Image (cartoon, rainbow, N blue to C red; front, top):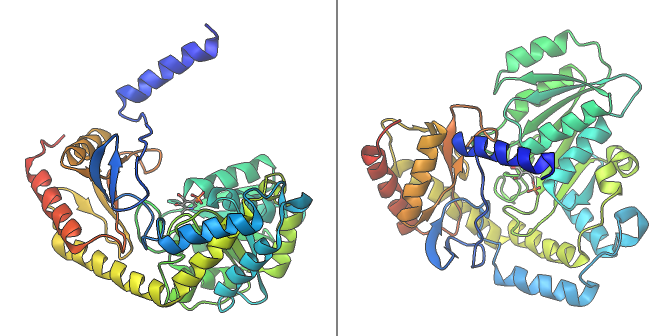
Length: 404
Ligand SMILES: Cc1ncc(COP(=O)(O)O)c(C=O)c1O
């Protein structure tokens, strides 16, 4: 047997022993609150379909119409022949969502948020002859961390990681940094904690120390702000220092992502963002459906769904109190319960599964060691009864599960 195959057996056994092995579960039914896995009905509290649009009849119809009008595949990367006029239309629409927040804004559409993040960070770090100082929030998403790792591999970065919400520590390093090009990078809504980045204060620091501020609003776009335009609309901030990332596979119910920034920054990305340049453009049919999704998000339906989601968040928060587990304080759809050990988190996820709920255990390296949790996500599509049922089931489990 090749060495690698033998070694993989050994290392997978270690993951098993440490309760860290991940597995795939295939869903039989469309994304929704009531799903089936292997014929078994489950109530799902784990998708990022915050507005319940992932199986919306208007988006199903739009995807099908898009395929009829524009075909299924783009055929090539954006800079060869894969960029269709519907991509232009989508980018113009996406830019308009951030026009109140970023002067001279332009948008660039990507196949995924992961690609958008690694593209933006690697390209931004190539600006200027000196190394870029990157200031990264400690709980940033893996795609931001991987973008920084790649940028460090290019030899173009000095990295500083600042602790969650520790702005004084961040300012101390910024003050002593003589690098001409600085970049602060943060999740907008922290993906495993659900709290918001202090973007007003981060922007003040960016202004004071001449830095750019990159905000990954994967979990805010569609959900935050009157029109669902995300964290910048919600916080009414505006600056040409901001690089905004929105993703379209979560609240928007489809797939894809975008970067909005000053047009000069987007012009730079088109030259330097390798994952953008060397990857096939996503389907024009998808771009067509995404236009429909954004018009739903910004219109009356979106406003109703956001109000419904807020009501569901309140219902959940009012409905549970725990004695031993730590429900993290969050006003967003991401509502984590930290239970500590991997073993307890897995035990809890299994018990929930038996009771008909799907909430996977989130373990390191996705979250710090000793902070394993259930990451409950709420959607506008959940009913009152579903949320009240979950509150009751979890309260009972907390009392009855043996503690490790
Ligand atoms: C904060 C954050 N950024 C980026 C991504 C990646 O986005 P995508 O799923 O579109 O690749 C995710 C997705 O899970 C995320 O939570």
